[in-house]
Length: 113
Image (tube, rainbow, N blue to C red):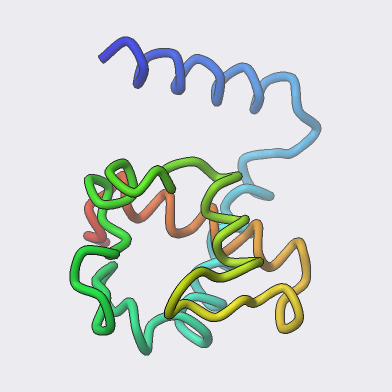
């Protein structure tokens, strides 16, 4: 509970102090959704994983696998791991950040629209 409250406070302060507007954040998530549909949904439809059952994009699995931050997700998308391919040569840094933010946001919503 405290961890979630601190995260909310940090995100709020970041949005207040950052030059990024809410509309830019929405565009980033929209871009992330499009990238996810084009690059990731083949293995991760609905936040699942058709290759490795325990490596889903659901919140509990991300936490269990220590991939529950924007930085950790971005690193995994960039560099890949085990069965997951690296995308640093296929996506720009901005695209990796956008799809990572989308994954984190969807995990918070339990992959429900």
